[in-house]
Image 1 (cartoon, helix red, strand yellow):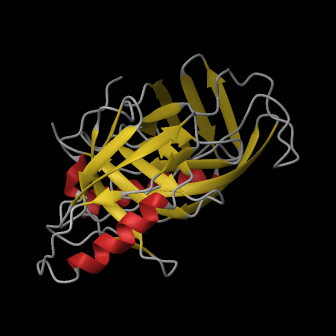
Image 2 (cartoon, helix red, strand yellow; image 1 turned 45 degrees about the vertical axis):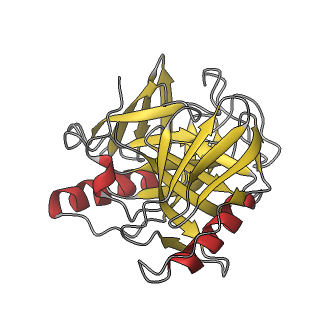
Length: 270
């Protein structure tokens, strides 16, 4: 199943991070034993919503979730991004869903989002059959079915900033019309536009960790939009502080080593 992007950038003020369901073996972090039927690889897998409560999601919204680690998970509802911790034991799952985005959705999207977050928050059972994931609540009345997909690659993809850590502990949306971008190239170089200045840096990454910097930039001064220079300084510092990343396909999130979000992006239209 293929992710498209035509609907995504309508939600330029959203935040990001991810859903984690589990690993195939015992998790030292959670102290629980994962289901032996869980396929490998599990951590790093990406899933797109096929139906919820036996109805298809709104066309073009493409809700997804990603297994980022043995204890951490993130997703996209079609309107907002969210993250969750989880505990898995046998075929039982317990999610602690935290909605981190702040976009106000139109009524149909809000209804879909509320229903999906309720399903995830109340999920107790999970089952994987091939490339299909089933989630249900205890009485089986609230259900979600996901299909495994391949995300867009992190490198060679153009990303547009959605939100960033302001340095005071808050994850804030990017200023309207500041058009902050990021592109990670093969060979360990990244570049982008920070709202006023162009920037670049070396980076290294593996399956989950990333190291960025030091970041170099041009030395222009800008007055518009208001606050753009303060945003640029905070954004570049947040980017350089990143130690982890999560690829949602439609979105890319950076975090510190304790999963505190530093910067979140949506895939730019092509």
